[in-house]
Image 1 (cartoon, rainbow, N blue to C red):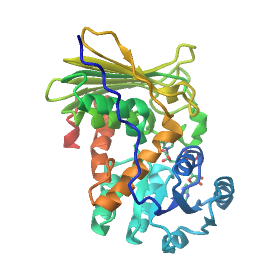
Image 2: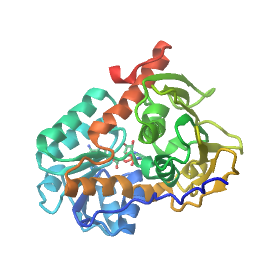
Image 3: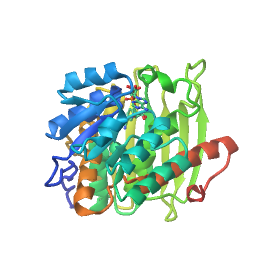
Length: 356
Ligand SMILES: NC(=O)c1ccc[n+]([C@@H]2O[C@H](COP(=O)([O-])OP(=O)(O)OC[C@H]3O[C@@H](n4cnc5c(N)ncnc54)[C@H](O)[C@@H]3O)[C@@H](O)[C@H]2O)c1
């Protein structure tokens, strides 16, 4: 007789106080289809927005009933009703906005990647620490149902000691949603697999070694890598692989995760990768070794539901004075994996990410 699989606790919770004034900087796709719907669903207070394209800002304000459109970032930062600045601009624009907002005494939720290079990311982290304001990073996959439920079940010992982890995604990614990414010198790892690398860190901690290989699809319009395989090796023998292909024109797309341990297994699907950004709810099955896989029902969608997670964690930090789960300091380790992957692929060698 095997111990039953416990129902996982995985839905994000808001702290008792959650009426902080939020102002959004950058009113593009992700803000409109993810940030603002998630905040509305949880009754958060969005006091205003700013985009350097004033028309975009006004359209976003109208669509989401946001009371104020600021003409400038300076005007937004001068508003005492703004406690949290929620930044969602391309990564190379983020540092300048973050530094100004921290100097104005605001707490920040930054988009991922925190920066395209480690120096800028570390500068944002340091600016937050000097200003004594929290900087959280929107690595919201940690709060997606499949990953959050897996984290809870692993913590409760369902798989025993983790030995093998695999994330395998073969999809037809709509890169046209982000025209600026077509000519980017970094693609999958920096902008997509960063979620998987961050989630693996959330589940298993930091690997000792990383090896990554990158490829392209014949005739692809994107400049940079759209096929990657990355292996993470942990000091205790755990091996984790992330295999991603963004040019799968077949009808057999797949996006799965599989976490195996000495006592059991958790396996499931990443729903949002089946019809991005509409997606499906993640699926999850778990079993103790020797027992049949049990279906663990999950609810919610990565987009928009997981987007409440980083904001809730930032609000918890503001009340408890403990860092948000995806703090800038934590995120440096995720970016070390990202840059380690590029270095590994470029130099065809294995990297110790903590050396970067
Ligand atoms: N966490 C996730 O899952 C996720 C998903 C998609 C995008 N993103 C990230 O979110 C960010 C935005 O992505 P998007 O898809 O919404 O892009 P987008 O191009 O649709 O929107 C970006 C917006 O930012 C505005 N902008 C650019 N620079 C600005 C500046 N200096 N000041 C004010 N406004 C500025 C643009 O005018 C535009 O409206 C990117 O960093 C991207 O990597 C994260």
